[in-house]
Each structure stands twice: as structure tokens, then as C-alpha cells.
Length: 115
Length: 113
Image (cartoon, rainbow over all chains, first blue to last red; front, side, top):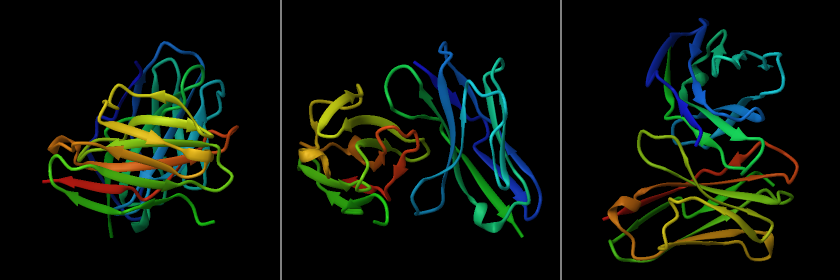
């Protein structure tokens, strides 16, 4: 079974600064997808960014970008110009491209943004 | 259509009682997923449907749990003879048949006393 590990239970960043959230995963598959989801307090989970394993180019969505290191099985999220609204739980997730459709989530990283 | 909706948002029940939750996916979405999220953890997959067919069930889905999706529209998740360990947030998500992004609902928070 694939495992997703987020080693940072909590992170803190000052407004306008940059922060990087770490994620590693374990898989023997070559075809898969990786995601970062954001879960604000008492609000529903939303997709921040996704990466297909077959793509070498790192995904970018406005202030959010990833560093996808396939050989190292690492998938970190960089948030630039942090805003107060970025404060949330961030979950890294894996989905197989070959079997099943379930998302396999890490335990999450709580991001605090200070003024 | 404003997204995935779930009802109720909160449920408090006594141990041994049965509970049922409802999920209404985004209208054109064929796939529907149920996850469970306990405090301090990421969501864990329970089951998913493609239209009305239940195609995959996790080992977490014990025989006290049953899910249905009649006519491929809304879905229900029933827990029989609830236990304190069932206390969690139950999340529903939906996606397009050919799409990968899963859109999540706000969840139903279950507390078993």
C-alpha cells in the first residue's frame, strides 16, 4: 500500500514571506498523481495543486508551486507571498493511476500565518 | 449548483444507535467517494461509487457500515450499532467520470456518546 508522510505537524510563516511544506511518499508504481489539498478551519477541503507523475515540469498555480522529485519520492509545496487566508491544514495526497480511485492522504501540516 | 452538500452537518448519538448521512454530489459528477477523518489525521478512504455501482470498499468499512447510491444521484452512508470509535468527520467527495479532481463537501461530524 502507498504511504504518504508529512513530517511537519505545524509550520509558521510571516505574511508576505515564503514557506515550504514537505511531503514524501512510498510507491512502486510508475503512474500516479499527487495533490495538495487545503482545509481551512471549519470549512471544506479544496484542491490547491496537482502533479502527474509522468510530467517532469513542476506544477504552478499562482502563488503555489511544487517541487516534485520523482526519484526521491518527494513532493513539497511552496507558498509564496503568504497571506492570512493561507492559514489552514494542508494535506498531501496520492492517487494511483493504475488501480482504484481513492486518495491516500498524509496526516497534514497546520500552517499558521502571522501578521 | 454550489458544490457537494452533506446532511446533517453534525450528529450526536448514543452508542448502539443507527445513524444515516446523506451526500448530494455536484450534479454532473458520476463518481462519489466517502472518507472518514479523525482528529489529527488525514481523511481515510471508505468507499466509492461510479454512478449507482459501488466499485471499491476499504477494509475500514466494517459490516456495520453500508453505503448506497440509488439511481446514481445522492448517496447515503449508514452506520449500525454505533461505537465510540465511530466518532469522526465523514466526508463526501465527487468527481467527473473522466476527471481526477475530487470536490469535497463540508462533512458530517459524528459524535457517539
